[in-house]
Image 1 (spheres, rainbow, N blue to C red):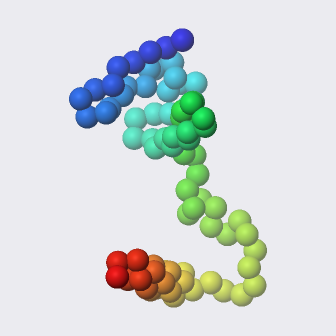
Image 2 (cartoon, rainbow, N blue to C red):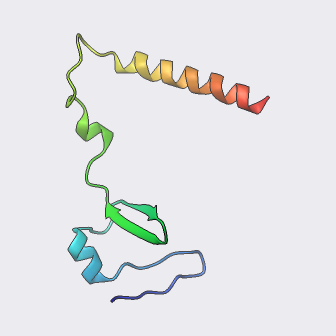
Amino acid sequence: MLATRIGRRGQITLPREIRRSMGADEGDQIVFFINGGQVIIMPITQTLLDLRGSVRVPGEQDFASIRKQVLAERATREGKNGS
């Protein structure tokens, strides 16, 4: 079992053995999952950009147009929640 302390601002240092076993290095991102009374820490090994093109879709994709549509829908949804 390895232990560490929580600092003033809630920061922790992952022990070297843990970082090595999960393949994490300085600057890498990690994700926390809460499962009952346990916290699971995993490295983020892929982003959405890494997965781009992994699902076949018919025709060309206009990502700028899709982004504008998503932002407009989000603004509309937030406007309704803020009323």
